[in-house]
Image 1 (cartoon, rainbow, N blue to C red):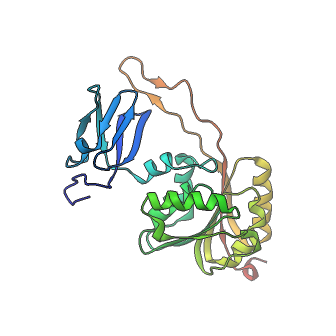
Image 2: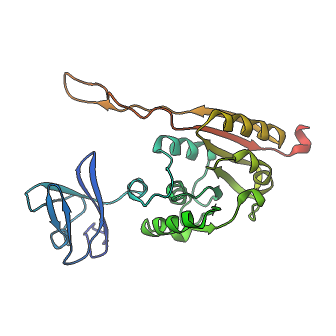
Image 3: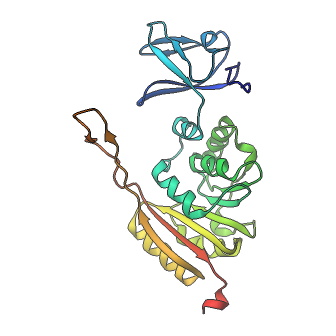
Length: 263
């Protein structure tokens, strides 16, 4: 893409019809993308600017949007259920990661959270992502490559409970079935005052993880849940939407201390 936002061959473009119907495509000369509202010729997109509209064969207007990192996670190939944005936001805040951070992630899955984390650490940071299942890792690799962010990620087809190779990392982020088993190895990998954040769907996982954190030199331990509902906005009819995403999971965060100090 040029500095002026002109769409070129091989650019990714998000075709936006409405909030529920968006399509992520890679622009190729001679290709067309078919929808229930007609097909869109790629040749009609090339040369336009992001933010402009293109008409389909049935005269439907599709807005041409530059894909965000969130768009890539929503459209990626899925090997597992991905974490919702409402939970990812809290993970980012409590992990404290930013430009240049070194982060260990365990439970790569489809690579959705990996993509978001890699976006936040920037070109000077690094994500070390552990995944025990090779079939999940290959899907994640393709998704990260599509998002243009693979160079910030080191994918490791390893069982994280057997050890973390990195040392003095800023944060450890867990999304797996038995996070409490990772707590001792996470302690060794984290720098002093480094943060561990874990996402779990059941309360039993939360109890086991919090107990492990208390036993392994972590403080400021907190477990919480985020519930978000959309608002239908229309003059005279504004109200919460009838359907909402309720429980998705619990987030636990804690900080590493030096054990000798707190014992």
